[in-house]
Length: 333
Image 1 (cartoon, one colour):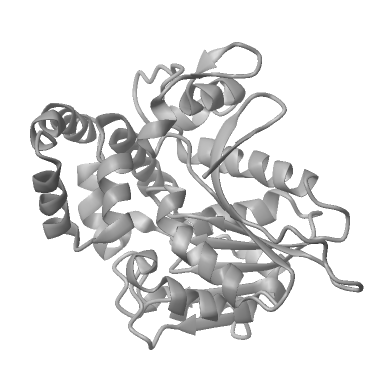
Image 2 (cartoon, rainbow, N blue to C red):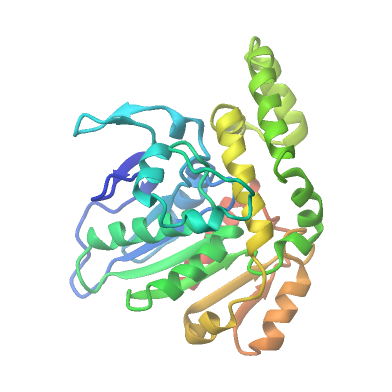
């Protein structure tokens, strides 16, 4: 993991796989910018990013942008070059300030603090800032491709809308949640768990139970493995980075805003970028099932979209990173 800092002091964790050599004569480098789903912890996507890099025949760099606040380490303060002591979350609340405060009005009596969870609007603003930073690191003519998973697809669509002049040659949407999340099979359940009060109670339970459960780490890991089916590094990331009161609260707060704000499909942006888009849906995906695919094809009959027939699940980064990467590599050319 790397820590990148914007000119105005926003700190972000990224996972990057880069080709250290210059592109061969006549070739342009392609930079694939991966935007995770929620929780937006880049370590979950490391095997997928590495598989993308290893399967690509082109000169390709792969950069995955983490969501501020979704990893426990985002809440740990450190001293920066200027001597200021702050955490990743605090750095982005400082950068964003009150510019996106209106997005929090869905919560009554909301008071934004330096440790506040970033809303959906905040997270999109963060992705715009990091995309701008990435672009500044590469020469003119570099090809950029977006790869958004789940709510990361919604953010990628917003990046296309907000940065129309950037040389984004491809945008790939994997199991994307682009419309009416709250009305999906999972959304109807999750929206009740992330309501104000409920998500606060969940965060409090994590605060109380984690010290008890982690007295014997192997027991804690076994319990999480039992409920999630995870093993190896994904299990470790979940236990060590996500299942803390602060990071869990930030992830559930973002989910709350997703339920409130993701409504109509942005057909205007899709129409403007029609030929550079690829969509990949799961027929039984409880976040965006086959009806989302058929609705998209009804609106855009010639759109490059697929309905998975390989049994790949919404959380593909857990068990299907290699398979999914081989598909994506074909679409970025």
